Amino acid sequence: MRTFLVLVAAAAACAVLAGDGAGSGAARPPSLGLVDRAPLRVAGSGFRPRELIRVTARALTQETDTVRATAAGRIVVAFEEVSLEPCEAATVAAVGARGSRASLKVAPRLCVPPP
Image (cartoon, rainbow, N blue to C red; front, side):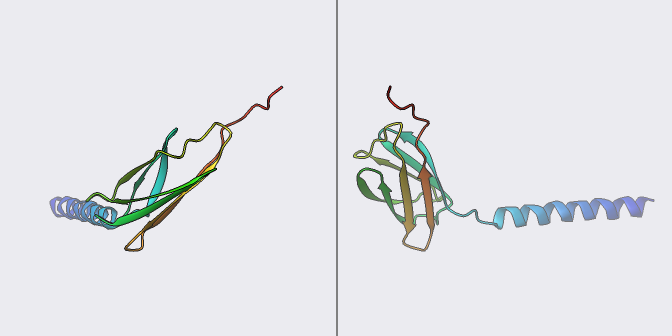
């Protein structure tokens, strides 16, 4: 019985270690999220560490900025010239120098037509 318990404990430990290794080694794909609409601010994660990222926002106007990802692969970009009114939509694309890519579509909020 004691040998059986030791084998079960060893198998459980191996399963936990294998799960941690597989989970931490799997990279998440790059993604962008909306932080604010006025001025337009987006945040991203999953980029390659310290990768140079070109981020372009398109709404009624277009603005491009280049930022460097952190060691953790995160970015934050503020587009001072792009402010979205409630009924406006926008797209944001981020392209990294080492191949990382992410995009975001900002949908317009529900708008009530004027009377």
